[in-house]
Length: 326
Ligand code: NDP
Image (tube, rainbow, N blue to C red; front, side, top):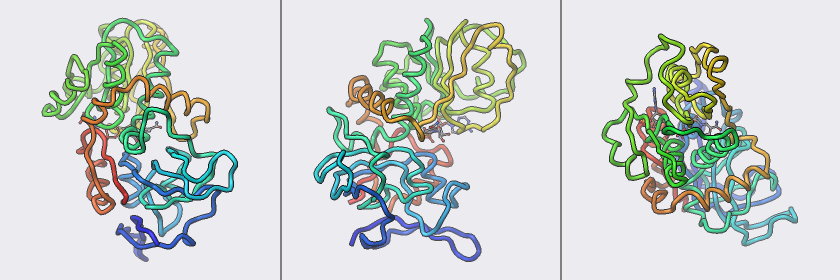
């Protein structure tokens, strides 16, 4: 028997989440059974712990889009009992049962061996948010980061915090956009040299081009803010579009692309190919200072998750939550 956070839906379509005792034979089919040690809380988890936002297909459901733990049993030659593994993406925690559980059974293809230099707790302090931040930094590097500060929007959130710490560690000047002025000291401790108030950037685009300010951007916000930022990029600079915390629309013009050669780079963490996953996790172990990562962490347990899920949807979680499922 083991414990999991199980979400049920009643006849009126209302969902409720509770820590529930489960048995191993209730787990779905899969090649590898993992004794989960830690999970985390991402924006999508907030959706899946609540009404699902269209992501969850069937109830009862176990959310948790990320987990790290130890292989307990494996039918796949790539993994054996005792191996440390990490999982992000592949719609685990949405279409498949996820990591808010002491046991998980998944396809071997979805797992990544825990990278050298990280333990399972640190891997979940990174989680999908940090993994995606690293993918964004790699995409910006592949296209060339220009001189001038690199802008990080939604900076005090999970993606933004990790992106800030990595970019600063790599020697870039970082400007963090936040709607929470009280997080300024926290962002500076992660390496942000400049704090930009959200209000300065979330107004509708009035002029398609403004001063060439940013040498790159990791954007977790989307919407009006992304539209504004496009018009402020340096000539030939790139924006990694990661998130939609501020909206899924893009009320922009194509002028920054045509007159300044600005690149808009789409970042998807869910279906990322295996080789690039390995590359990103290795870069995380190398380029994310562990003391900065630790400073982002807020610990939690399975029973805290319903509240934390609601908080992250309201943009009220700072940094990264690490859930000790045991
Ligand atoms: P968080 O909630 O931790 O961070 C989002 C941050 O965005 C908030 O902390 C807040 O930062 C800012 N924000 C929230 N609401 C608004 C608003 N209305 N206008 C402007 N800024 C706002 O979430 P994550 O960091 O985990 O994820 C960020 C985004 O990235 C989400 O949309 C998520 O779905 C997406 N995502 C996408 C992935 C992909 O594969 N493409 C993978 C992971 C996440 P502050 O308080 O500093 O202003």
